[in-house]
Length: 129
Image (cartoon, rainbow, N blue to C red; front, top):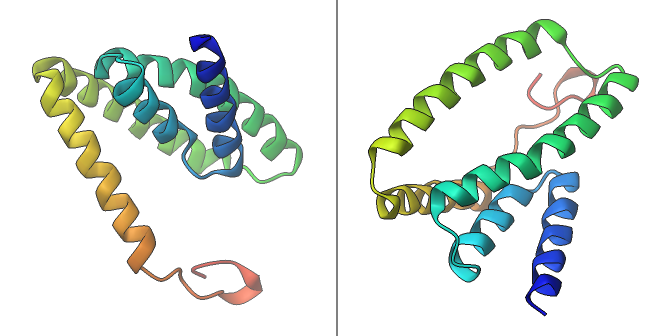
């Protein structure tokens, strides 16, 4: 019966990811708080979960002409460097500190969403100009 809960959480996380509201956070919280998975293992599972969702998003955004390839290349390169640095930092610290830092990150992002206003529509109806 445990697989039913796992399936439901995965389905909800996929739906949240499709809406752009943090399916990975939902999945990580469930895996670490309720399923008893270690933080590093949960982050690895989250990455495996994220890759197919991202691939589908790239296909749809490419078809809609919404991808700036120069910016994507720069962000991808910076992302690879960030992943390598983050992986090294995560391997160097105890799992409990990794969990606490992740909790602080989620708290900070949640507070920002609650209290920071979105930029006004700029010229052409785009946010921020």
